Length: 205
Image (cartoon, rainbow, N blue to C red; front, side, top):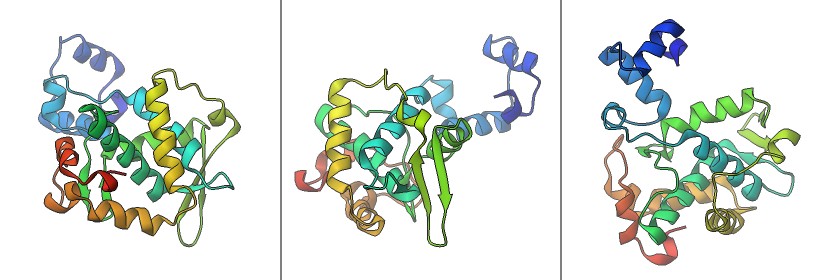
């Protein structure tokens, strides 16, 4: 975090202790890293990053094709469907990540930074082809512990992942683009979880 903010470690420690303030620019950098809004940090409404990582790994494990691989785009869409699907059933998000309406589909900033961290940690393999980026679990990633996920959460992840297993990335991209939450939000806008409750049941995931 100190490196991201461009400050020394001792200074960052004093920030966490409330002894030193950060600038607006540093707050924005921090929010971008955490995949949230600056206001979320000020109100302590921040995503549980360790849980988000476990969700990502669990979705990759359940949703990869027979060869153990999945495209980077399809993985992002599956996590989105899991998060909003959980909200549809329980009226609370699974991870709390902030999904924006982007041209390539709903995705949080957090997705990219967390994925990079998991690749650097040796839990995920990245294979770049001419057409796409393929992800797969390493041996260490397959042995990862999902201690933050309940049995019900893992069950929904498996249900949604298996539904889309073997289907082309373009199909799931089209599906998420046609959902009500994506349709009624403006480009770049954060998609409210509450909108999924207005979606026809058969199109939630």
